[in-house]
Length: 554
Image (cartoon, rainbow, N blue to C red; front, side, top):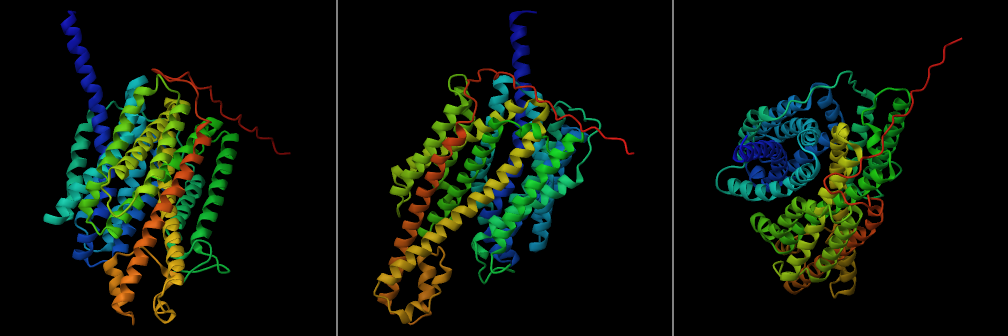
């Protein structure tokens, strides 16, 4: 074979190889676009379907709960039927769910659509990791995992613009309808992927499914309602209380107890020689456990920042959704870029060092934001702070994903994907809830303190419910104060108090998040301290616990 012919074969093989990645990325974009299009489309959906904004938000919660609750089951289904087949079926199922979403007439249909989409995604997410492990190795695999980690950020930015444009000028339904057609395209392209044979003898651990699903649902639901129902003590919005305690905190506590029961049950099954729902080999070393801790922290910090940024831009500055999308473009691009290109440092820097530097970047960016955030979001230092946060966040998402994969080996790729899916969804709920609780709690404290030191009469402050303080725009506060006996001068004073308290609360929230980013350096010390190069040193052979011998009955 001539040198030119060999070069042509090499180029053809490389193009075919990266076609696999394009198919996987399109499937990831299909899921991520749906998640990001929902909040962007809240206004048009509320106006057309006459449902409250909380009803639209519930659809997103339903999706997240179904993904997190059943992603470990989804990994088992992939092994039982073959990951490529499951990929194809779930891509179409997700597309069908998007069609239901596009034709929804009420909140019930939206919830049904997102429940179906969540079930499909629960099985689809682990297959993406397995397909990458089956089609790539060495540096290519590291690069592919980086691209997969960057895809949600790029999809989020794309959804902001596309869904924002369609919702404004055509209809919000088109945003979800195009995902149905995308799913058909991905399905047709998926036949180019290498078929993955099913694993024989796969049995579903029903008890493990129930324990893990209920635990995830309780924890997620509890975190999502910490603000609504109270952190420790139940407030008036709580559906019930137990000796005065908030059901949100009770849900979290009981969920953690069920998770402990799940791991105890899984260990027992492993000792008896029966396969658990999640292969415990993915968590059997301190290095792997520290990786998960670090992933949970950065997974929570990202959503917390994503909660605070729109809160500031839309509530404090009164800007639109499209303006919000434009304002966070540098942050989003920093996440995506660092997630893709950080792999080029793997042969020069150890995972431990990269993680420590990345968490330091995140903390530095958050500290900068806490000092420079003001009414002019476009200042250079604010953008610089966001860029630092994005660079650190994207680097960590890819790095920790790679460490999980290389520590566990190719045969456990589905379990790694499932574990990552659970960690991502739980950390998202935790980060959003934590940011909300901290920001609202600080706002309430600052407002109460400022009001007590102001010249506003007690008779006026009694007309405003200071026990239920939240982030509101100046226009909304004007409307509320207009219903009281306040004079124009007193209304202006109340607005000034609100403006100052909002900024102080946001700045303090960013500073508190920076402390957690610095604390995350400690679990980073448990990451591998060797450079990876093409492939890290082979992991230690992981032996399953010996099966417990059954004694004969006498």
